[in-house]
Image (cartoon, chains in turn yellow, purple):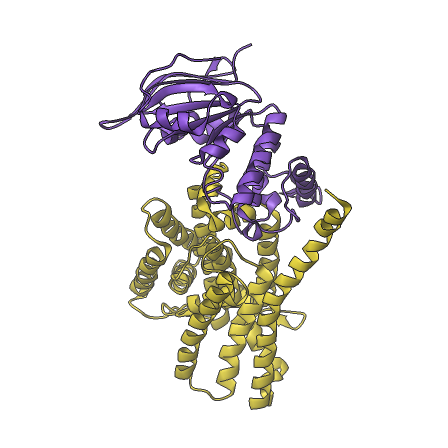
Length: 325
Length: 254
């Protein structure tokens, strides 16, 4: 190789970094534009108390989006997140309120519930060859039904105080739950970018056949990713119940749309092989600001639903354009 | 010294279809053997049996004189047989180094504890590997997505070389390539030869097959019908054996 080619070899990564930054930049600029817009529409939008709320609301979407980011990176999808969130919260709340188990145990039951739901999704995808969309659509219905069955549709109140601190306690001016999400994001970024687990996740999403030929146990890995996704939904449920001081069987509805949008806006691709945790974080923040800001601006929550639907489709459309070019 | 690969009396049927009926052939270290034949002659089945995708119904495969029985492509790989598929099977979104090391990542410890992928060593190894072959890949950190067909071919070959393959099976390596790039593949085949790696080369393009190979094996209906040194034959003769119009079954030349 000539020295000229060698210097190109060394300098090119910079260009790649800039390319990636452009993707993130788009999300970041959109976020800034939304913040600007909403602060003009309602000055209270910029208040500390509102950002405290945003950090609470955003946390749930953020945690779900982390799980979704891994699943989407494998070219899969999990649309059962909202239901699994609700079911995990209901089971944990039921255990704590009816059987008086400790909050630690309550959290464990929620995590196990999420893991089981994720495993069911993963097994349907890997063993039964059901497309991820349909597998998780089934889970969406099944988990919601199970959550409603538990109490005949009533919410569960009276969660122990120790449990509520998980979400409501404060550290450095922000709620515990926001710090938990932040820590989880750091872990997720580490796993996705630095470990074999993350590398295989991207490789499978990019070309499952090549991963298989490279000796990766694709089915086992996918199962693990779906289980992790279920655990992320359960963490969402744990935080949600702590935040609202109750478990609702209908909690988390539509949350999967927020998380999918967050991942795609952040640069993830539904075709798999791509994923960034920083992008996902920005995407989750953007979706939260959109929901919170339109509320403060007095926009009807029904309109917000419509906007959410449009944003999801538009984000995927932009992703398509990006992949084609 | 025994041959690198020796295949004797290989049989494989799929239901009523006999894809291989008594196939014999030999590959020496550093030798490029082109296997040619019409569609359905059994070339694909042959390489799938050798690479562990299918188990043979009968016959023997000797690797360096030792009989081998592969249960899966993984077994074949572990014994030093790498297959470079027509579709190349690269993970497009991963970079060149990540593809070469996929499934066998070099690791280091983060803070002395957590095992993480050693990307900087992978990068260095990749650059030196790409320099050894004429890869024409400007940047080892670029995702494979951005590479041309020929450059992708080079990635697959670099992977085989790094992992000390003894035998590389190339299935239609030029099928999807533009003409100038197809010629570069010959250079890559040559680098394998120079490393003492045996190559089974399959190509519909007989001109390229003849140019790449030291020896040519013609298959028809599941067995070898002709074998010759590449310099002693031409397209016309090969086509006659491929289509069965030269039906005399020749003895093996050495």
